[in-house]
Image (cartoon, rainbow, N blue to C red; front, side, top):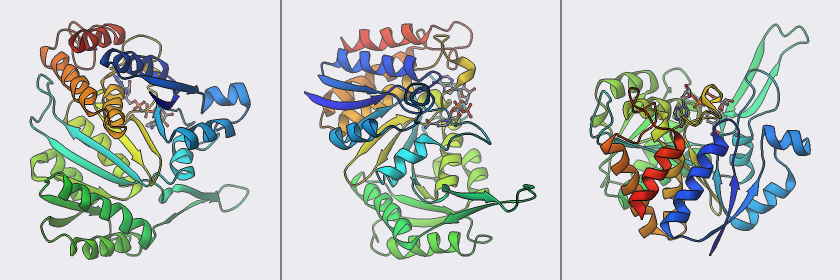
Amino acid sequence: MHTVTLIAGDGIGPEITHAAVEVIKASGVNIDWEYHKAGMTAIEKYKDPLPQHVIESIQRNKVVLKGPLTTPVGTGFRSVNVALRKEFDLYVNLRPAKSFEGVQSHWNDVDLIIFRENTEEFYAGIEHYIDPAKSAAETIGIVTRSGSERIIRYAFEYARKHKRKKVTIVHKANILKFTGGLFLESGKKIAQEFSDILCEDKIIDNMCMQLVLDPHQFDVIVTTNLFGDILSDLCSGLVGGLGLVAGANLGYEIAMFEAVHGSAPDIAGKNIANPSAIILASVMLLSHIGEKGAAQRIEQAVARVIKEGKKTTRDLNPTAPVGTKEMTSAIIRYLQ
Ligand code: NAD
C-alpha cells in the first residue's frame, strides 16, 4: 500500500484526477489517497492557497498527484504551482512529448524529452511596479550557477541512462548575456563530463522554428524556466495537443506529477476534457513508486484507446467524440 497526496485542482482538475484514480485502481495498485485542496478551492475553504496541512501531507508522503491549479492573470494571488515547486525544491521539470499512433498531427514519431529548470529566473516572482502610478514594472530573473548546473547535469544523466544521443541547450545568451550566458556556459562545462552524448546549443527563437520545421532533429532539450514552459506547450502541439502530455516535478526527496496543461476553464465541468495527460502523469508516478508493471499496462491501454480512435474525446476526435468518463472507461476495459 502506498500513500500519495492528491490535489484535485481547479477547472477540469476534479474530473481528470478522478479518471486517473479510477484507472490506477483498475490496474490493481493499492493507493491510499490523501485528498487535499490548494489554490482557489483552498482560499474558499481556508483563506490560504497553500495551507500548512497540505505542505505537511506532501512532506510526509513525498509523492503527489496534482490536478491543474488556476492562477489569476495579471492580478490576485501568486501561482500555487510555482509555490509548490519552490517549497519542495522541485528543480527538475521533466516533460516528455511523444507521438501516439492514431493522432492526427503535423508530425509522426516525435519523441522529445524537455527538461525545464523549475525554480529560478522569471518565475521566482521578484517583481514590482517602480512607482505608485505604475508607470513601469520590473521583474528580476535570477539564474544561478548551481541551479543551472544541477538541471543540466540531470538532463545529461537522464540522456545517458535512457540511451539518448543528444542534448540541446536552449537559451537566449545573445541578448541575455549574463543570465542566458551563465546557463549556456554551465551547459558547455557539464557537457565535457558526458563525451558519449552529443551536445549542441540553440537560441530560443530559432529553436521554436526548428521544432516546428522538423522535431526529429532533437532528442533531449534542457532550458531555463520560462523558455521550458513555452517549449513544452509547443511540443504538446507537435504530438496532438495538451490533452496528451504529462510532466514530473522532481526534487531530491519529493516528486509531484501533473499534466502539462492548465485548468482549462473553457471546458470545465462538461465531461469533455481528455483525461490522457493526467493518466500519463499517473504512469510516471507509478514508475516512480516502483509499480512499473502497472505503469506499462496503463500506458499501453491509453495508447490502444487513442490508436483505435473510437472512444476518444473531442480534441482527438472532433466528429464523433465521447466524454471524459467514456474514454476513461475504455482505458479501464483494456486494463481488465
Ligand atoms: P490550459 O492549458 O488550461 O488550456 C489551453 C487550451 O487547451 C484550452 O483551450 C483548453 O480547453 C485546452 N485543454 C487543456 N487541457 C485539455 C484537456 N485535458 N483536454 C482537452 N483540451 C484541453 O491553459 P490556459 O487556458 O492558458 O490556462 C488556464 C489556467 O490554468 C490559468 O489560470 C493558468 O495559470 C493555469 N495553468 C495551470 C497549470 C498547472 O497547474 N500546472 C499549467 C498551465 C496553466
